[in-house]
Length: 266
Image (cartoon, rainbow, N blue to C red):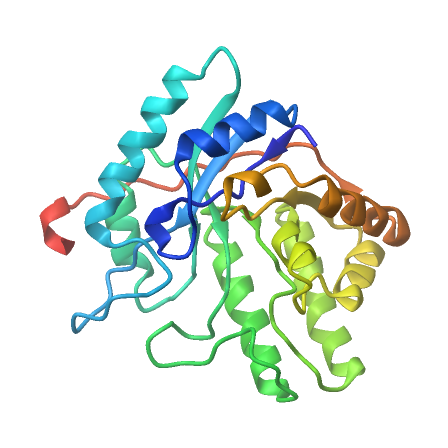
């Protein structure tokens, strides 16, 4: 594993450690590329503050810190500046107006909620409801269609416990869609390490049959987990078992720049 594009910082309120610690552990693990992709702030209405994302007024410090370390460590490792982004149609244009003012190199798509975080359903909640499955896949496809996302992080996050035939139908369509857009799917090491409901074997069986390209993502919330050989071993076995197309690196699709003033959403 020479690259990891899924790394968090303390700003998201559920990760620990300094950025420098993540970098040093990545170097020790032999990585050549490290991407920071902390949970993006969202310009929510009504004063709502997320408990799992950085605040809007922390974004500038995040950018400055990563860029400073990118320069400092340029002889040791290639560092990239990204964000893990929820696609919430209601807030997406406002988000682009904010992030477009900074040299963000890539977005990872992560669909933790249907609709949005404020007034809709958590995607990780077990459900047999086919409408939730359908909504998850439709929202993810709409996100991928924007052209802003370089990778789909833990695409198997939806915790569907209903009929296999229904899961097969919608997930296969989602995988075909991602393949057509040449967007890699991430096998998530945090899910492996913490034995969460993902990675989902059913999902990766379908992805292997479709022929999706996959990439490994540490999803590191602790410096020592940026290089995780135990999770890597499990992920490599998944790739072999399902005959997945593994990519060492991914193409960074720079999110578009919008014209607005930072103060509009601060």
